Image (cartoon, rainbow, N blue to C red; front, top):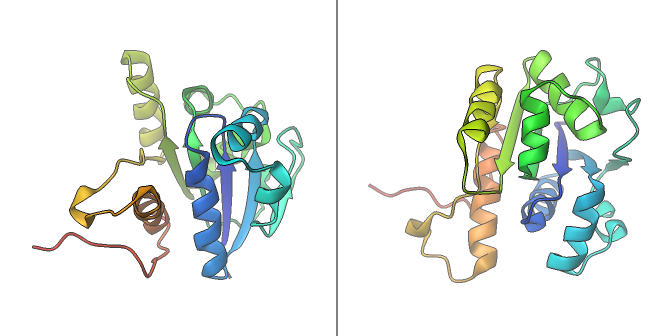
Length: 185
C-alpha cells in the first residue's frame, strides 16, 4: 500500500489539502497528515472545518512540532509528499534546508532520500527571491506545482476546479484519479 504525506500550510487554499486527502482515502492510500498552526486558522476561516474534521480524513496525524515523528526520518517508507497549499514561508524554509518543524523536516527527508516532493505553492506574485527558492527546490528534486486551474475541462463549479488541480498533484506521485480530465487533441 502506498504511503503519502499530506501537509497543509497556512496559505490560502486549504481545500487543496482536504480534497487531496479525500481522493487518497477514496483510493485506499495510507495518508500521514501534518497541519501547521496557521493552517488551523485557514481551515476554519475558508472551509468552516476544525482540525479534528480534517484529521478524520487521514490515516495518521502528527503534531507540527513533533520533530521525532515517523515522517522526520529517512527510514520512514513514504512514497511521496504533497504540501497543499504551500506558503512562501514553508517553501523558502525547504529551499534553504531549514527544518524547524515537521513539515519542513519531512520535505527535507523526501529530497535527501530522492523521493517525490510536490509543492503546491499558493501565493503570488513572486519576486526574484521566491523564484530562486523555487529553483533550489527543483534542483534538489522537488516539483513546484501551483494549483493553476485548467479551463479546457469546462468546470461547472469551484469543486470541479479544485478536484482537477488535486488530481494533477496526485498524478505527479503516480496516483491516477478516475475523474481527471485530460487534454483532448
